[in-house]
Length: 136
Image (cartoon, rainbow, N blue to C red; front, top):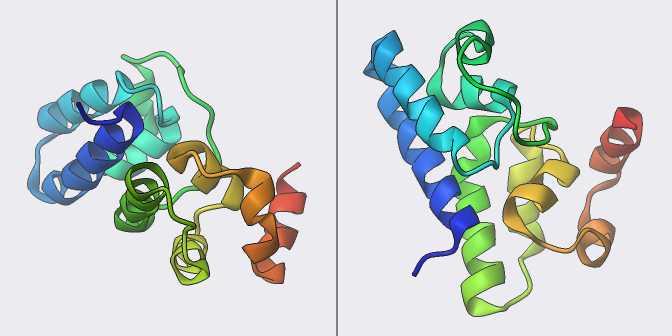
């Protein structure tokens, strides 16, 4: 059985690609399904399915924390979760940097992938550490 977070990340990655040509109804259906994983904020859902957040907020209640997030990081977030969860290996600094350079905050990477904040904080480049501190 697949890990719930990994399943949610993989589905989000798929829906981000599929939503390019989807109509509003299908996008809302995608958002509803992703919402069930309780991983993404309403704003993050709107980015993933490429629809204005007002349409999502009209039919779904907040059920997850937010954070600075860009859907371009989804492939990397899936890879991080796979390495951390299934292989039990340390996530390479280069993979972490790719996720951060996409515009996703370290705290959001931690929350979505389950990596340890303290174990990886020293691997976060200084520029991204400043962003973390600015969000508080």
